Length: 147
Length: 284
Image (cartoon, helix red, strand yellow):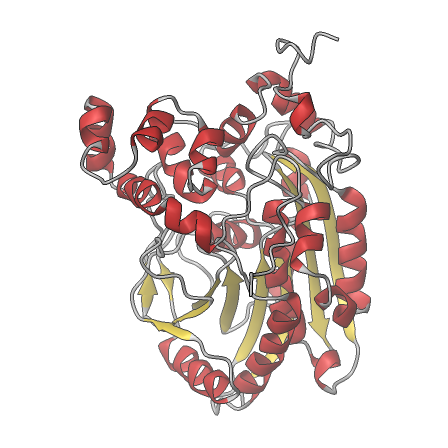
């Protein structure tokens, strides 16, 4: 019998379940190595060579090199693991989270100061909230933000 | 006999720790947040327990994908603040209470909650930020701390109901410890927030207010909230709130005792990506 996964229709959201975890095992385990300052230095000095030490897919490696966190997550990454890459880059959680929305750092920070993203229209795929697929990327500089 | 005197609930946002560590707490952005904890710091000074049982989640720090325990109790004599990628926080080492921790592990496992016993682990912001919020920046923490880590990183995470019942079992375990220790239980994490994807930055003040109301007055109803409801209404990381239910389940009023007293309640948006909630409940 298929497992019950009631969380697949939440817009802009990936639940890190056993299937994602299996896909992202090496991607996430690579991230764990960045918890040592020496490893962070080695990674920064030659990212490609560092990534090649793990049996990650080429797509996963490229997503890390591009710092494309949405892509990393779709390939099995989890934000708490991926945060180690951001930390290595000297980024805060706010900068990392904001980078996944298409907004500039300032736009995202302002949204949070104004009370954050509304849940209205963002509970279920198919509504019209700002986290829905048809409204990506967000922010003034994106094609969506222009109108 | 040991007794549980109070429970503390608080978010554990890493940026709060960074703000303190970098001397930014008086900045306009952070000032309202820290003001909400002024009462709590004084309260803790006036009501310092012998041990804090601190429920938190590890954020892929001590536990990678190698081992993912659902409930893990720290039984070591000490726990070092972890390097989460930014370098370790400049906060005191955390002293454990191996005797009480082992006793609770023994008792709770015999009450059918299959805990993982951890004798060596570093502790991350999930544990150290609540201590900083409640104690400020001391040279040593005011008392020993038993770290209790809950998996909320990889689905499925334990249900609110299971967490609440675990709190009840922990309360029975504490009561059966022979030494006359004064113990507090802290539940940390939340409130509404989402750190991932195009939906990052979600905050739901209505959900948070209702959750706090239920937690205080109708905790069984709060415990009935399902995983998917947390995700939809409070963001994917809002699920951390199940950890507050462990602390709430340990209070006297839900274990045949007298009503609890609300000492303090505070809410603030934002701290980085997150809605910060905080409350203190006292057993009478």
